[in-house]
Image (cartoon, rainbow, N blue to C red; front, side, top):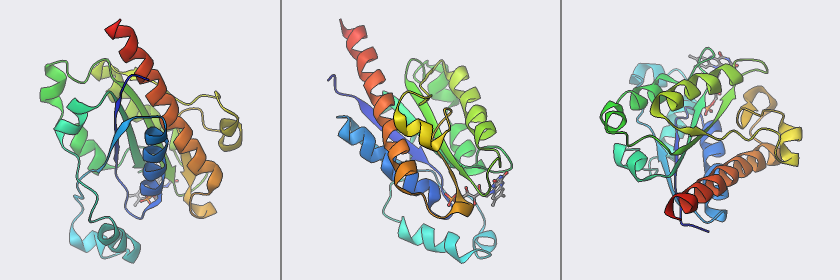
Length: 202
Ligand SMILES: Cc1cc2nc3c(=O)[nH]c(=O)nc-3n(C[C@H](O)[C@H](O)[C@H](O)COP(=O)(O)O)c2cc1C
């Protein structure tokens, strides 16, 4: 397989999306990609974080995860973005990073890459699909190649979200099926990015 660079860029307050991001990184690695797992910067004020002990704990637990930089996007052939649902939309922390990409976008350096996204919500029907579709608006502007999981693998018939791996937090932490869906989504994105790369090189 053509060597592919995969960036998994995520925001997580309390660890759910981080777990999905780790599974996606695993899937991308197993598909043969060079992988960078990157968190976006935490922008919430300490007083907000202090309202939820799990939030502060997660920040400590992931202190060793590198923060994303624009170079990670420039480097990548495929980028998977992960965000919790925030009122049916992406978290502002991830959006703030996306809003620093104007320079790369202007140079056309975000175009022609493969993009895919995953999410979690507190409740079922809490806005997972609207969150993923909202992120996809950015991919259109970048001239990206959006690769959703669709129903292209049996695991998708179990998790049931063709837009991107999604988890409902009120059902407990992500289980085997959801983590496998995240691995599969990343594997599919990497495989398609590799085919595109090989085709362009031919
Ligand atoms: C400000 C805010 C807005 C939220 N909006 C929604 C929402 O619209 N629908 C929903 O189901 N859950 C909502 N949630 C719950 C989060 O989506 C949930 O806590 C998150 O998916 C957990 O992911 P994490 O552990 O990676 O932070 C919201 C949480 C916060 C703090």
